[in-house]
Image 1: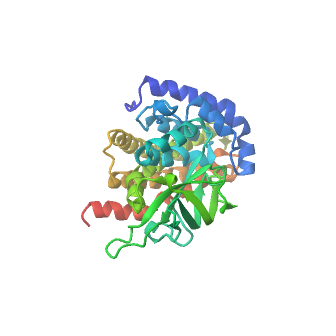
Image 2: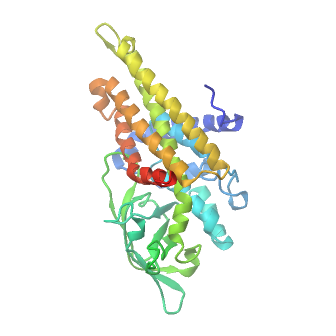
Image 3: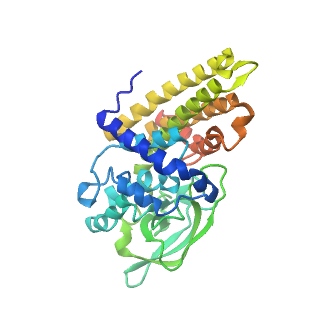
Length: 385
């Protein structure tokens, strides 16, 4: 079936992105994998192409397009080529909405132009060691100085995507104790300059997959953050997180769908070329049935993703909708990718084949952005259960 969510502008953009990937990323991707990070200056090329500025308003150097669909095209094309832009997955998909909605005019003028150009890379720091999905249990603190000019930030974060290359990090910290009736009260968002004294980048974490993504531990020791870098209002950070988590979960659903489609393509191409017992692997009935079943699942994923993308652009994507899309797409993608790897036989287990890297990269989809178990809880609550 023909997809109806994309128009001629999207497809022209897709051609540009595909050419950029083939000429600028694919030739150096093995080097990125070996180093476990995307070179910081490469993001300037991405910014120059305009990929970071699509949703940034024109007055701050972007294209001013209020739609997530162009970002979805980028995700699909990266998966198609078996590559990624590493830690920048947090830069626009996760961080931009916070600045657009909660930053004041002076902050937007300071931060958004660099965000669009790639000169100022952003990350967001929510998770802490020992808290996992329980964001209300965070212990990082930010205390206002006696003269009221700075917050003193202390604590630690972990699993921070883009944490090594980031120039600014949106840090979630407690400025007040939780109230008796609401343990989520008291969390505040601060946009912290990573060059500030006391801000330390710890280990770049050694992950199973997403090898080009600079996932880091961060530590804060008496970091002085100017009050001018407070994002939104004090003590309202948890509620801001709740507003923007649906977009993060949508982005994961889109990525899972794109990975599943890529896996089917990799398996189809491999089984057509690989001969066993005197004929292509694709000629066997089992191969045909496996790929057909995978394609049917991917078609269902496409319907879910496209409906969610349309709802998001209409500002109608609810927390339960996003949780449902993430749960279904990440679980289905895991099944598809596993079956496609099986069709590669022993070669599917070799990292030189994109299906192997895809298998490892995909696994975290059911964990980050809220585990599958958390998604089920959100959906069940929405059902009145």
